[in-house]
Image (cartoon, rainbow, N blue to C red):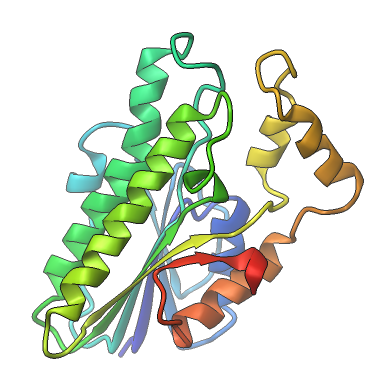
Amino acid sequence: MQKLVFYITGSSSGIGLALTSYVLKQPDFRVIGYARRCKMANPNYTHIYADFSLPGIASSVEIPLFETAEHIVLINNAGTLGDVKPVGEIDSKMLEQTFTLNTIAPAVLTNRIISLYGKTKAKITIVNISSGAARHPVESWAGYCASKAALDMFSLVIQAEQRLKEQQKVTVLSVAPGVVDTPMQDLVRQIPVDIFPQSERFHHYKTQGMLENPEKIAKKIVELIFNPPNETLIDLRNR
């Protein structure tokens, strides 16, 4: 019997890979990983190929059911920075894909998980990987900022709904991990300053060793899952 089951999107790189590796250190934890590539070989890991930037994937992808599980954790980690340009110059197709991956897919997967396990005895924890950019505007990041802000509000609504229930079954955490040493940061540093005015700041984070280690962030997120705070919107830089 699998007592605790994690569903992790974007499990092949960055924070998602670090989370998957960290969770699988526990022999009785099971992980269902969703990504375009498989980077994990472990008997307690099941990989499901998925590209959540494509329309309809989140609503049709397989979600294996574990009827006897005591705790279900969905970590909506997969995300994209999108096309970094001022509004009016963004590629419209890429803008659509940014919202599909960053907002629509997590919302649909969350809806499906709560529906799937709503009548079981399992406790449900939803972790949405948000960003400080969801709460502060960043020039040329309109798609990223807005799609993550929408994810924050989606999380707040679910938690508000749970407070209306006699027994709260679902816990939702929308976590801004801070500036983490991931492939997304590599991409940010490649963007010219004339397109991305804050480019120099992100180069400074790297040269000054200010980027957080993904493994450290994964540990903090798992600690939050087992000891959830009262608030829904969380900034790991304050923890």
